[in-house]
Image 1 (cartoon, helix red, strand yellow):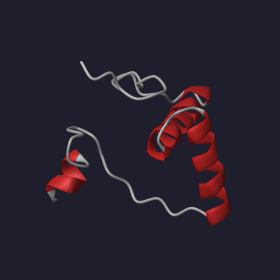
Image 2: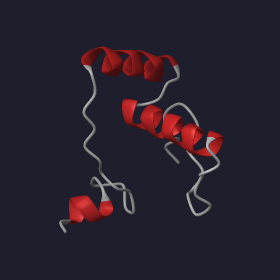
Image 3: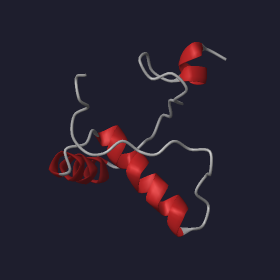
Image 4: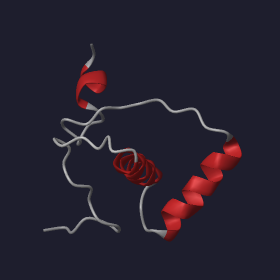
Length: 75
């Protein structure tokens, strides 16, 4: 297994990279929603997946809390 598959992108240790194929219209709608919420598309998809897991009673107990909206602080 390569380090990209194991650890995710550079700068995100412990994260997993996933290839996701989306209909272009769905991608565009998600991108607009993410921009409205000041999130990256990736962060928006993760937020929606976490909500779906919680709604289904399948939220992992070991997962870290999601970061809030907006850019991270520089300090």
